[in-house]
Length: 355
Image 1: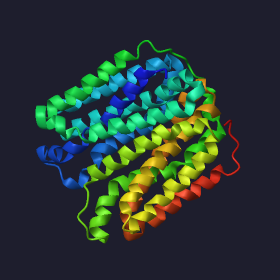
Image 2: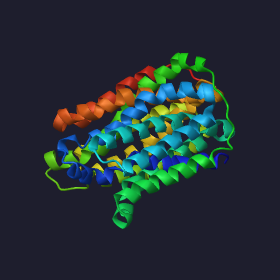
Image 3: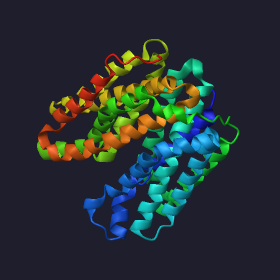
Image 4: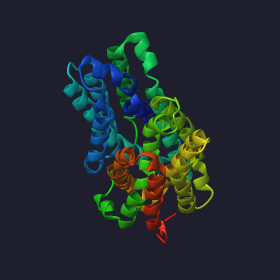
């Protein structure tokens, strides 16, 4: 496996997606903000990442994929340092938004370089890339252990320091420049739209399952962080299974995994609701590992930072709203989001790709 510095950085990068989650209640209390706006903090990061995916990919055509990756990590590092010393709620939001911007510069460039270095093991390398995001996400969700020892400020500084070190470790990577013409690939756009529902299903379950169990099943169950932690553990397993795409049709296995992912929320209506998390975690991450492999090959591996950015941007911009919709659907949320997850997949029927 080549590109181990990218894999290490992927783990550190993922911490930034979640390290504020354990501190959201304290942040709201410190700045006298209502608990009703707790979702604004993670949303600020998502907005930075989603809005800047394609512009960041364009930047990579000018300065090269390695330089884009390193610059993204440096921006994420600066974001964490800024969060650590923020003296207002607004400054925390702006700082975390900046972290999302940096994240957009890392994701597609890191995936593209890793793909280029491991062409013969594409499914495995991108599966591991996804699995390590889950590992880093798990660490971020449990960053409260760090805060309990050193406090919030030093805990956030530690995230910034780790991210800075990971940026320096990647300075010796190759620096290819993709062609911007890959942005016009119609098949890549279809892939992004078709899988946006599946992307939204994953985050809707992770965020809303605890509330659903309390409101409609009259149970006191796991917290949101515990549910998301379970999802990430099994998602890591699904990512590692990406090697299956090197042994069989990536496209067919991706579609099967996507259908299973979209149907898994229906188990929440049964006593086997925790099994839904297991199935969702494994097959969602397997599906996305295969999706990234198909996407990287479709536009040409050298141009895969462009095609990966397109798919990720469409997933985030279209799939994010499924979580908000689910909150209004009440008891029937899982039926509706399962349908929304499956129907767009029909766009993939008959789509001929290079896999």
